[in-house]
Length: 243
Picture 1: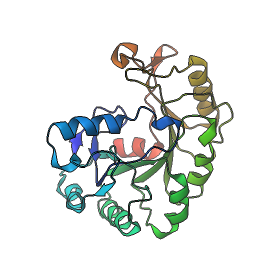
Picture 2: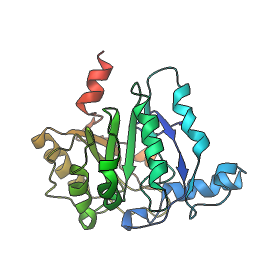
Picture 3: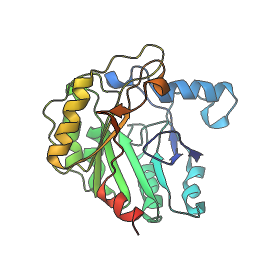
Picture 4: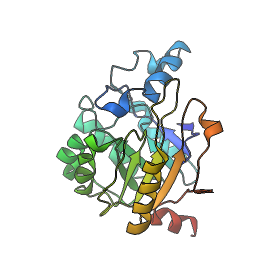
């Protein structure tokens, strides 16, 4: 568990580590870069590098130790639905989330096909938010697969946004995050793509969160759009905040 600098969450929790690239959004993978750094620092959890997917059963007890309600990004350094993660371990991760309803767990995957295959075998408690990454129109099909799941809250991470998504089907989608690519050689994000998505969300009454413009210096680029900061969250989160 670690405090997170990601704008839309509070903590990260990584029951698995390692991954493999499957689409254009993976080209400059943040987790791959971080794994190299953590391995060089001698952190045992990352000693096998990024391309080997590993489960870490010892991490499953961590959420039980948190005293206050948390918003948690699950597997920022991997993909829970990677084909190398056993179904039984995925079920164990879900059991932990089911047994800690005081926390919100945000699960994000690029492997919507596997999610679709096994979602009926998982228990979808109200505190599990399920999302898919969609970087361009080539992987827009992931949204349809997400929509078929029993997740109570469904979200899209359109990051890194590397192409327009002009006709998103936002039916049963509760939240959309948009962000540009960052790093040494970031692919550009057109402001018109972002503005169009924001208008689509507004029309469909879907919470819209603009994470960053990205670029080589993402802090300098900031996250101002239309002269304002968009940090909308799903209604379930708003209700929790008002309790």
